[in-house]
Length: 337
Image 1: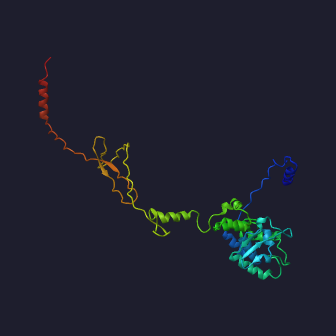
Image 2: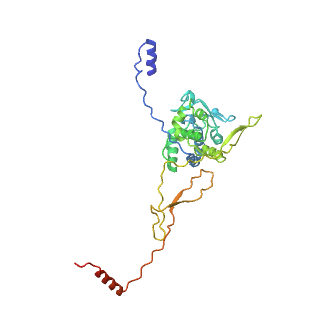
Image 3: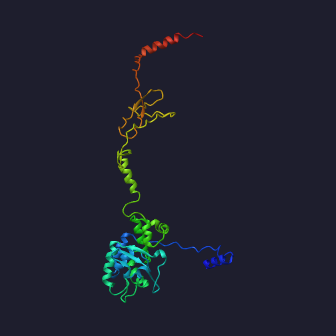
C-alpha cells in the first residue's frame, strides 16, 4: 500500500498520506542455537532414517522449505555444492525467499557422506532428496510432532523450533573462524550486517579462548626482552634481534617525608625506647639482587645501649650508744629561753 501511494503521489503530484506512517515494529529474531556437543548427541540419537536429514540441516544452514524442496538435480557431486533454487511451501514448489537466497552451498565432508547414503535410499525412487514413503517432500508439522520434539524431550533439551538448526550452523561457522562474507553467502544474506546483528553474542571461538592470541604474543616477546626490527642486507627478510640493554632508571630518594622512629623491643624486662636515648640506624636486610627495580634498604631505629654506673656505697649502721650521744649533743646546742 505504501508503494502504491508513493507511486501515485509521484504521478499526480500530491503528498503521499503514508509518508508519516512509521513501519511496524519487527520482533527481534529469537536465536537459541545448539552447542556442538548437543549436535553430536542429536545426530547420534535420532532415528536412523532421519540421521542424514539432521546432518544436512545442521551443517548447511538451509531453511526448512529449502531442504524439503531440495531435488537431486541440484546436487553437484563433482564440485561438492548444493544449488538452492527452489523452496517447498504449502505443498508447492516456489521461488526462493529472496534473490539472495539463490545460492550455492559448499558441502563439508560429513554432508557429502550423508547425501551419498541418502542417494542409496531415495535417489532412484523420488526426485526429492528427503521425502516420505510416497516420494513426496516431508511435511514440517509431521516431522516436528513425531520426530523433532520427542527427540528433544528424550535428550532433556529445551524445546526449540527445527529452524534453530539453521542458526546452529551459522554460529558454528562463526565460532570456528570462517570468513563472515563466506558465511553470509552460505546463509543467503546479501551482506554481513544481519550476520553480526543476530549471531554476535554466539561467536566465542571453539578452538581457543578469546584473547589467547594476545597471550601468545606477549609470552613470545616479553620473555625475550625488547626486540628491534632489523632487515637483512640485500634481502627482504626481516628479523627481530634483542635490543641493546640499558641501565635501569634510578629510584629517587624520598623528599619531604618525615618518618617516626620505630618502637624498639623490650630487652630484659625494661623499655629501652625513650626520647632521650640516641638511636642507631641498622639496615633491616640486604637488597635482593634481581632484575626488577631494587627497593631502598629500610632503616630501623634501635636505641643504643645505656652506659650504666655502679650505685654509691651505703653508710654503716649506727649503734644505740651513738644515737643517744648524738641526741644529747643536739639538746645541749639548743638556746635557753
